Amino acid sequence: MSATLTDFAGKVVVITGGAAGIGRALGEAFGRAGAVVVLADIEKGALDATAAELSAATGAEVSGVVTDVSDPASVEALADDVFRRHGRTHVLVNNAGVGPPSAKAWETTPNDWRWTFGVNVYGVANGVRAFLPRMIASGEPGHVVNTSSGDGAVAPMPGASVYAASKAAVATLTECLGAQLTEQGHPIGVSLFLPAGKGLLATGLWTSDRNRPAELAREAPRATPALTIESLTEAAAKAGHELPLQPLDEVAADVLRGILAGEYVIMLGRDGAADTLRERAERFAAGLNPTSPGHTLLPV
Image (tube, rainbow, N blue to C red; front, side, top):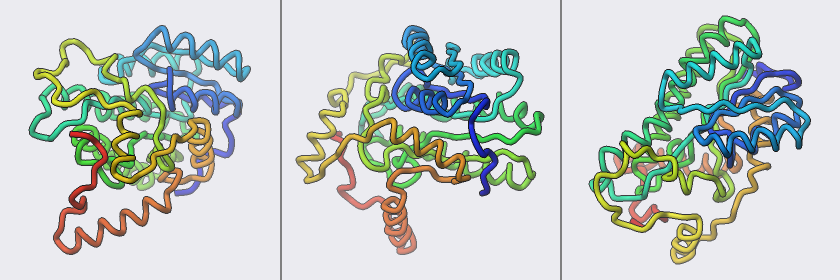
């Protein structure tokens, strides 16, 4: 895939899940690159604070729009607002995501699946449906970035079956989207963003239950305590692994670099992931489960 954008100065960038974590880091990076930044998030207080702080820190125009990405009407309203105020969108980053409790697949609840897929999968699809037709109609070069995970595009941790399945869906959707846009000759690039290439990310994903709607609460008590960065790090240490933290500003900088380079897969540590994929392909070719027994750090 060739690059469709050469810089971000004056470009309009929309980022879902923009109030904190990776979304906030991306907002700051795009702002410092001269973009007009629109952050979308379901948490109004955090969103308003982040927009004000990034505007002051970068000197860029940064605004926030409260959005529930799982709701098609809410995402359409976001697109309406962006195009009304700015007339265009050059970069769409479908970044909002949640992580349900780790659990054995047979111990998950229907609402675990509804909530996770509503945000992680429908959220991306809703963004594509609301923005891409208008981006295509503008005729201007653009780019779509969909946030998946190594859990969905490289190798799943079996204990995170619901999350991994949702992120695998995002990876497949993104692959199809990229092929379709290329086939149609539209000047819009597509990237699959896998944020955890070199270590754990200290983001709001670990506490995303705070935004779980009451109507999608778990139907059964948790079988295990809530997973935190601390508990995962401890579990990894017991398994003989060290899990460093990945600075979010480095992750964000790599996304901007990847867009300008026209990269389909944006991932720090991509070479190591490629080695893992080759190993999985060998197991697949041999008729084996690509995920070998014991390939999990999650306490389930």
